[in-house]
Structures are given as structure tokens and as C-alpha cells.
Amino acid sequence: MSFRVVRSSKFRHVYGQSLKREQCYDNIRVSKSSWDSTFCAVNPKFLAIIVESAGGGAFIVLPHNKVGRIAADHPLVGGHKGPVLDIAWCPHNDNVIASGSEDCVVKVWQIPDGGLSRTLTEPVVDLVFHQRRVGLVLWHPSALNVLLTAGSDNQVVIWNVGTGEILVHINSHPDIVYSACFNWDGSKLVTTCKDKKIRIYDPRTAELESEAMCHEGSKATRAIFLRHGLIFTTGFNRSSERQYSLRAPDALNEPIVMVELDTSNGVMFPLYDADTNLIYLCGKGDSVIRYFEVTPEPPFVHYINTFQTPDPQRGIGLMPKRGCDVTTCEIAKFYRLNNNGLCQVISMTVPRKSDLFQEDLYPDTLAEDAAITAEEWVEGKDADPLTFSLKGGYVSSANKTLGVKKNPLSIPRGAGGAGSSSGGNHASANNNESSDGGAPAAVFSEKDHRNILDEIRKLKAIIVKQENRIRALEAKVSASNGDETDARNSNKNGSGGQTAAGSDSHASESANDRASTSTAPAADNAHDDD
Image (cartoon, rainbow, N blue to C red; front, top):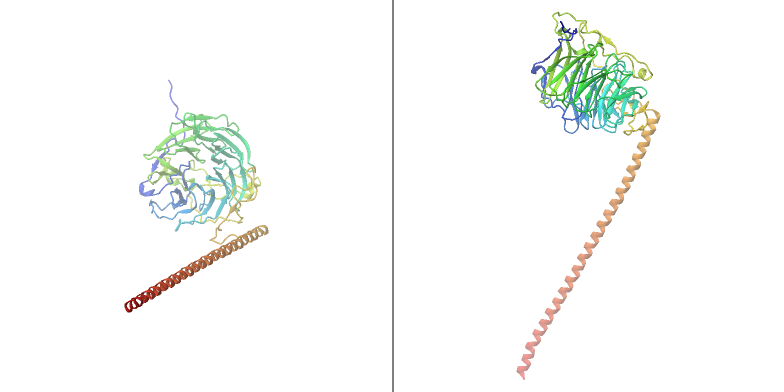
């Protein structure tokens, strides 16, 4: 007699439930860009969605209490000159968000508590280096103000947002970078590329540690680090069937698991919950969300269930565990973008009868504070992200301003050389505004002052040159006007002389006629006398 043993798991009965329409966000013009991005980012304070915008790129930022129908003229974050491709909230400051765009610029914004009252066009920091569109922005999990960006110029750059400087420059990718992910403490970096390979780097030195074939299909692939060091990837095989795999970093060529899912052509985004070891697979254009549990026992990646909806999804965002409701045993919350302009809120819940805090469902989760500074991380220090207990709930902290210490001058895009693999202290950003309210953070060195004076002298020389050119042109115009006046006067004089001569000739002719007329009767009288 044989019987099947059901695997024991506290997440085996997880189910999803969509909130009512009046508790969701409606009338949102979601971006129609074909770029493979989630178009959505969420944290315990705000929801950010990339939207369609005339005359540039923009995204909308909504507080969580602003549900219902969104006004068509709602304020946007709209400082980009091209469509926005990717956005990411800072894990250590719920008021700071980074955005990458087709205008090749990465901007970091400070959102006030309560949301926007007018359209925001002035960022805290402009990060200028990429020569082509920037389609990926990613924050470091434990180091403060460390941001990774990747563009269609095949370059990966790690910035110190607090100073606007480039910390590391990775230029060894032969094609477009599809995805990137830090490991749990930020000491390793995994990337996937259009050349179908997966690579692991040391993010401080840009050293390539290992690489292997990821998925054989030509469509986009994704890779993420799991909490205990394994790598989970999604992609396509040669028959365009979607598949996922689980790999060990020291044996990338030999997947632990490789499973085919279906034949859909939408790119799958793996969203990972490190506290529960659950992976949610959300495909672009799909109407389902599949979720799996990763365990040490074979087959290692266990299918749990599928959440089904009637409408295909355009994008999706996952709320950090800090924003989940522990009183209802909610372990995940998704913000799902539909093509009809609705942002649907989906809650994933574990059914429990008790109303007490469930410690087995909520281990210590990621805190809002950073473990180390950017300077410590560059010097070689690694640290796991700080964690805290959700018992008693979580209350968002007050608005923390992004400290910008320096305002380095802009340098031309791509400066620094394509051959430099790591770039310390490249002054490649232009911080337009300080975080404390509009006054420029003017901290210039003597070299910066000399450069500014040189630029001023060059501008003055150009102005003098143009003034001389304008004077010469004005002189030529006045001279040509004088010649035309003289010619008109001479023409008038010539026509006047001809008129006078004609009148004299007419006068002489009339005098001769009169003389001949008078002599004719005299001759007749003389003839009669004879």
C-alpha cells in the first residue's frame, strides 16, 4: 500500500485577495514604454508609478491614503527630458527615490511627507555619466547612499549619491545589461546580459569572478540573490518556453533546478521575500501570480499556488515587509498595474485563527536604517542589513533629508575613459539643489574656482568676437543702404533733364509754327497788291 506524504509548510495555504476597487488607485495613465521594467515601486509611505507624459518623462507619487480615482492633473515628478524607464525607492529613506530615463540621466528626488502639492522638477542630485538610456537603478541593501545604475551603453556604474561621485565603473559587459542584484550583505553582484550569460562581480573592484550560460533563449533574463547565497534566475529556452532555475554561485554552469513553466512570451520578474523564502513570479502581460517556496530539501523550489485575475498586468510592485499588516497575518502586498489604468492592491495572507502576533510568520525583517556608510563600504567593510521585530507594528519615521556634501562640476558624458574598470572619485554629477530647501550646496575647491574663471574668460572672448562681427555686419548694411540712396537720386536727376529738354523742343516747335503762320497772310497780301 502506497500513500503520498504531503510536505509540511506553514505557507502551504497562502492565498491572495484583491481589495475593493474603491480601496485601489484608478485613472492612472501607465507608461506604454516597451522597456522590460516593473513600472512601479512602493514603500510604507508612498506608491510610485511611471506614467505617460507629454514633453518628457514623469512618474506619479501617491500617499497610501489617497485611494480612489486620481485626478488627471495630479502633480507629477517630471524633470526628465525623455521617458522614465525605471524607479527605485531608497531602502534607508522612505522619502528618497531614484529614476533612470531615456535622456541618459539618473535623478534622485526628495519627496515631502504627505505627497506632492505641485509638480516636482528639481531633483536633489543629477548623476550624469551614461551615453545611452538608463534602464536599471538599484540601491545597495546595507550601505547608505550607494546606488547602482546600468544603461544601454553596456556600462554599470556604482555611485555615492551623497557626494555625486562614481565609486566603481564596470565596463566588461559586451551587450545590454538586463538585470542586477546584490547579495544579502552587498559584497557580491550578479548580472544578466543580452549575450545570454550570467556573471558574478566583486562590486568594489569590478573584478569578474565567474560567468556561465544563463538561459538559451534570446529574450530577457533575470537573476536575484537569495538570502542564503543561492541564485534564482528566470528566462527562456530555445523554444521560447519560460523557465526558472536555481544555481550555486560556485557552480553557475550546473543548475540545481531547471524547470519549464509555459509558452508565454512575457518576461517574468522574480520578487523575493527574504523573511519567508518565498518567490513570486509575475510575468508581463500575464493574469496570474505564481508563488514558490525555496527549501533545502529536493526539489528545492516548491510550487505553492497561483493567484488568478481576469486582466493582464502591465507592471507590479512589492511592498516591503515593514508595510504589511501583521494583525491579519499578511505576508506580502502587491500593487498590480492593469492596462485600463487601475492599480490593483493584492494581499497575500496566511490563514490563522489566533489574533496574536505570529512570530513564526514574522522573523526580524529589514529595518529602515543603514548598517554602514558608503565610505566604509568602499574601504572593504561588509555588514548584513539591520533588522528589527514587527511585534507591535511599524510606524514610519519622520522625513529624513538626503545629505549632499558636495556639488562637483559636471563632466562630459562618458568621460573617464571606456577602459577604466573602477573609478574612484570621478566628479561626474551635477547636484542642482541641496536637500534643505533650494540653496545650492556650494562647496568648491580652488581648482573648481580656476575652472569657472577659465570658462568665464572663454565666454567673454566669444561675446567680444560676436559683438565685432555684429558691428561689421551693421557697417556693411549701412554702406549698401547709402549706395542704393545715391543710385535713386541720380535716376531722379536724369529723368528731370530729359523732361526739360523735351519741353524746350516742344516750345521751339510751337514758335516756328507761329512764325510760319504769320508769314503766310503777309505773303498773300503782297500778292493781292500786285
